[in-house]
Image (cartoon, rainbow, N blue to C red; front, side):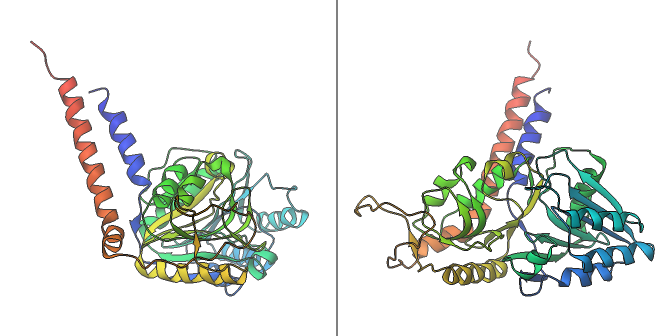
Length: 362
């Protein structure tokens, strides 16, 4: 039976990279209303766990200090390594919080701790792509999801507290993508789903190995801040979002499409099955796409169409969009169930094989 445990663990890790059905209570959109995060912190009664790349927004620091002073357990994990160096203002705010009862940890065990995550009272999760800075809340374009779910809250609180303590297990929470654990599997999964693809992504880099999965979609809409990929994009330097939508499936988190973000940094995101959220974020991606000069739909070249060199950081060519067929729509709706069924069959087959290999022989 010595092979059984590794086989089951491998299967669980793959399943963890599949989406979960989640109700999302609120979508905060920067620069419109992400300062409402401060209000959620002010309402904390027992605990606030925070993990962010950089914190320079003083009203949030004040809310965390006030929570600590009224007896709330407040833990904040910050990245000890920041591109260009940790801002002096961030150091001062961290000292201010620490001197007023907030437990602060500068984590330098990863190239970057790039997470944007809050867990309040082990009931409410706020997760997404906005840094708590003046530019993050007031200028950048991204989203934070507010989810009231105690199970998810406890799972994500565990990640934050482990990062605070410097303990790094291999997480296998369903629907939770954690770099450098299972982000590659999760992003590959959603990018492999059939249907129109919507991406708002700060970075799309070829070293991720995921660009071919973008190009396999006949129709896609991509708005980015930076890319070295030879794909059609609309460019907006204020995009910090990390959003992918295909059909009813959504990825939202801090993970960019790039090697370091996926394989080296500490990052956290969610893979969600939620038709209403998918429609909401499709509309938002298209809004940003058009504002950046994109002219939908962006389509990949086909073998029967004379190819013109695709332009990076330019407007995409415009081609008439084909209406989705009934078969395509059915494939979108049934993809999730089929995916789970396939993996159940694989797990059962693996268990039976291990039992047969370890049978008693005469």
